[in-house]
Length: 142
Image (tube, rainbow, N blue to C red; front, side, top):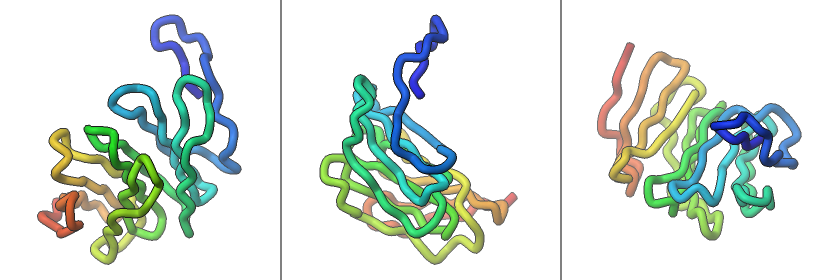
């Protein structure tokens, strides 16, 4: 759902996920939104009229999603410990980050310059990745 932050008025409801929505983000220009769900999917929506623009199917529950700072990419992360980077225009998977996390991923984001990706995991770590090739740069442990 999209709410007016000043008045609290409900503006729009996205209809399509079949289970709980676990994460959401607006594109930098505010025209699109991405949602992640326990229905094993992420979806990109038109933030003004609620039209479904892209569907990203997964094999497991998703707990994170975010737009890149330029709005050209979307990252998702979830139950299987993998993160996926998609083209926000075509939905094509451009990068898969896998194998380093020992537990489910709880969130993901791009750095403000778009050069890095951060994932957090239930294994009490956060990891910094190269957003171009998925190379692990650093693991931060709690």
